[in-house]
Each structure stands twice: as structure tokens, then as C-alpha cells.
Length: 555
Image (cartoon, rainbow, N blue to C red; front, side, top):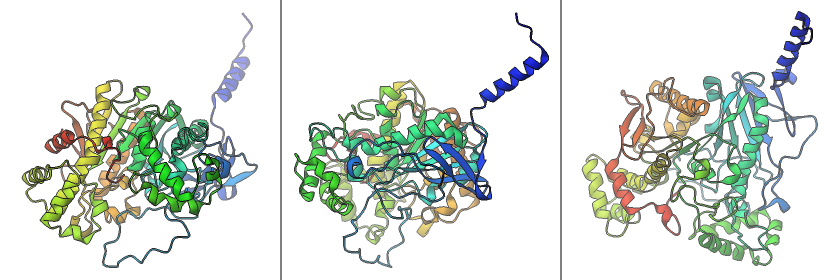
């Protein structure tokens, strides 16, 4: 045995301690602003209320030209220190710049509830992300990666509603939001056209999300995050992306928990539906099936101008089952086996549909025959009268507009969330927790009830930035935000939302169906078994709208 003295032990211990220190010492730039070294180069952020903020960090190369419809490539490395203090460009979306201006909004109409549309010049060099962290030199904090809403068609990760300062500060977590390709740029189905070279073109928007998660895995420790505790979550289209990633082989191993808010993706488009959409698009841009590479030379305006006609009768551009990245539907006929060990939270809001319909003054004073006509478009033929009668019996004080909101919501968002949660619970491999958001917005006398997207500022604790949908913050609203954001943080940290201010939240099962009811009433959040049971059973008898050839409804 070698001769070991006190000095040898001290030096050995010092060397071992230095070797174990995986996180580099924090750097600072001018004014003490934070600098972090990523695998592509150094980035400098800013400090806001004690939180280190980095905006517009490239995680992928430009998707323009030869990158269009192809899997993304990592960001091109840079030298020196890159300033990352402003949001990056959103992906191309919406109307082409050549389109005539829209008429001014009717001043008699109420303002829109959702006012977080992307701003700034759009670009195909859009693979950027944003990070909020309490500190860059200490700790391994849970990481929450947000996938924005807007269906698979619009949106960005740079909405003020998604600002991560308060949650990072109060919950001691790292928040990440991302931009990625959307609509025709992210989800154009090309199947075997071009000899199969473009077989996964309908998945490249999702592959962008996968690349962002790879960036998180490789770099987030330098931002104080723990790459072994990554939660993905999203609302509406973001929830559809999130639930779809559960069935996406390239994404496996890159996240460890999943939250689905108002967007349970059970099924994807079939190749037949997707090809009809593609054919309409190709005809509009005058590109033949044997000349697909020409698509890479079209201008953004040419591409965007052809989108409305292609999706009018076929639904939005989105991922397609049978593509390399999606060999199966996400949650049909059951929960995906490849993500069986991933715990989930799944839920929706009580009257999601009011955000889409409530801005129409005609809805407020809905006539009976119009109610019947609209409900007839939501349920199978001959079922509208019984459906309306059920709501009037269960909610005798409800006006016609609320009945319409509830019917549309229960037929889509609510039913699909219960189907997904039930299938995940029946898999019996990892727990799932279910919720319903019931907090009524006080705007315009409360006539919107609990609209789509209204839970977002409670999850992010950004009430003051989302008054257009939630009204001015109150003490009760802030208390609810503290509870919800805390539950999401608990889930990211431990794979279980319980703890802290969270009321006891049982795991979901398809028998008793315990569900957390998030509300700011004096009773506070509470658990109910099988809420809206009669509505759920009736809508389940009709079947999910996602089984239709073309799914109807928003989202």
C-alpha cells in the first residue's frame, strides 16, 4: 500500500472536487450582464428582476432554400460573444405581404381576448429559442420547455404571456420557449414524391422541436438547468405538438414529463387527406409532382398566398401518420408504448369555444333556431334537440350562447382530453393527472365564462401581461396563479404535481376519473370525480371529431 500523508489526501480531495464541478463558473459581460458558453458559441443575455434572460438564441441553421422541407441542422457556430437580448424572427405565417390590407376592425366589436400574435419580420431563419433562469452558475433546476399555440399554423414563443421571469424567480426553474416551422413550411406532405427524398417533409416542424430539445440536453446545464428533468408543455396547438411528441421516436429520451393544455392529439392526418391538401397547394403554385425541388425556390409570398385555398376543405397543414417520424397515431387506439414511462398532466377549460365565437355580437343574442342550427353542425344528425335539452336540464340558468360554448367545448376539447387521459391511465405504466380550468374571466360581465387560452397566464404567472383575457389581476387570481404555477413546477421537478400550495391531487383513472378543478372561488381548487359526467358520456357516444376524414373545429 503506498504511503499516503495528509497533504496527499488534501490535494486528491481538491482535484476530485474540481473534477466533479461540471458547471463552469459564470461569466459576465458589460454591466455585469450574464454570458453562457453554448456548443455553438457564447451568448450574452440581460438581467430582469434578478432573472437571467437570453432571447433569440439560434438552435438551428436557416431553413430557407435547400433547407426547406428538410430536417433541421444545428446552428452554425459563431465566434466572439453573441448578444441575445431580443426575440428572434417568427416563422413565415399568415397573409402574404402582397395581399391587400384588411379593412379596419369594426370599433363596435369587442377587443379580441387573445392579443399575443407574433410581431417582427418573419423569416425562414427562425430556429431560435429563449431562456429564463434564476442563475447560470449554481444548481440543477427543472427545465420547462414551452411549445406555443396557434394550431400547427401560427404563433411564436415570444409572446408576453409566455414571459418566464416570474416563474423562474418564484419557482426556481428554468423556462425555455421556442420558434419552429409552421403551416406549409413545417408540415407539407410530399410522401414518395421526388423518389421518397421528401418522405418526412410533413414532420419537419416537429423535428425542429426535437432539435430544440437536443439543444436543451447539450446546453441547459450552463444555464443552471438539469437536462435529466425536462418537461414539455403547451396549450392548444402547442398541446397537440406536445401530445404528438409522445408518439414520435426521434423525441424519445429528450423529455421526462409532459403537460397537455387544451389540445389532446389522438390522431394525425392520413396520407390520403394530406395528399389532397398537397395537390391543391401544388396546383396553386404551379409546381408539378415531378418538379418538387422547385418549391425550394418560391418566395415566401408565393407560398403563403397558396395556403388558404389548400386548407379550406382539407384542414390545416400538420403531421401525417405513416411518415418516418410518426409511424403511428399519438393516442389511438391507445397511449403510445414508446413513452409509457412518461408521466402526464392533461386538461382543458370549461368554455373553450367562447374565445372563437364570443367576439361576434350575434352570438350574444343568439336566436333559438340559430342555436339549433349551430349545434346541429357539432353533433350527429338528429341529436341536436336532445343535446340542447340536456344542457338546459343541467344548467337551467344558462343562456343560449353559453349552451353553444359548452356544446362545442365538450364535443372537442373536453371529450378528447378525457379520452387521452383515460388511455394513458389504462396503460398503467406512468401516472396521469387530469384537470379542468373553471376560473371565469370578469371581462364584459363574464359573458365569455372560461375561454380557450385563459389558463396560460395562470400557469406562467403573467396575469399583468394578459389582461385582455383575464382582466385586471386580483388577490384571488394571484392566489390561483401561485397554485397552478407551483403545481407545474412541482411536476417538472418531481414528476408529481403535489406539494407546496397544491391541494391533494389524485392520479387519474378511467373508473372514478378524479379531476382537479382549478378555480378562484372561496372554496378554491378542489377535486371532483368524473366532472361533467353526463356531457362526457353523451359526447363519447358521438365519438371524437378526430376520427372524421377532416377534423372540424378550431385548434
